[in-house]
Amino acid sequence: MVVGSALGAFAVARPSPLLLFRGHKAFKFRPLSSSSSSAEPSRKLVLYSKPGCCLCDGLKEKLHAAFLLPGPDSLNDVDLQIRDITSNPVWENAYQYEIPVLAKVLSDGTEVALPRLSPRLGVELLHKKIAAALKQQ
Image (cartoon, rainbow, N blue to C red; front, side, top):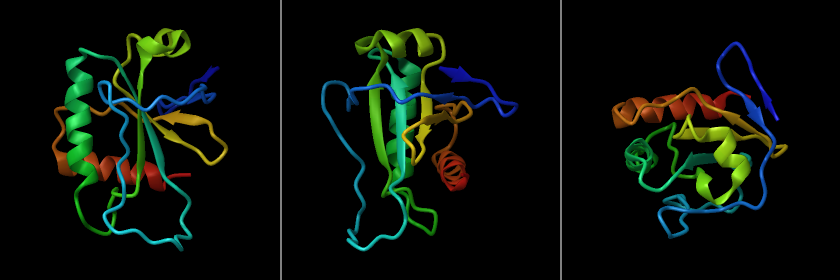
């Protein structure tokens, strides 16, 4: 189910099962330093993409670099799941003309698509936009 908003973001029921892909390899961004007593809820993002999409590949590269930047708004604890839309007809129907789509996973499991992030953005600006989006409830 897709619900529009004035901000251009939309909520989507969480599809199942979760697929973790980067090409053919599963991966997860992990914190550089682990702390077992984190009071902050886990931060999760989903990137809807497909193989051979140059925009998707460009955004993946920038995301990887942005997640490695240090600082007070560090993203190194964010769990990023990459979903190949060609592996699920629901995802393909929803995102075939929109990829890459980056969505924030809310605590109830629903996803909210972030405003389109161009792979042409600089790493610092991409980092800043994602950090701001993750702070919003």
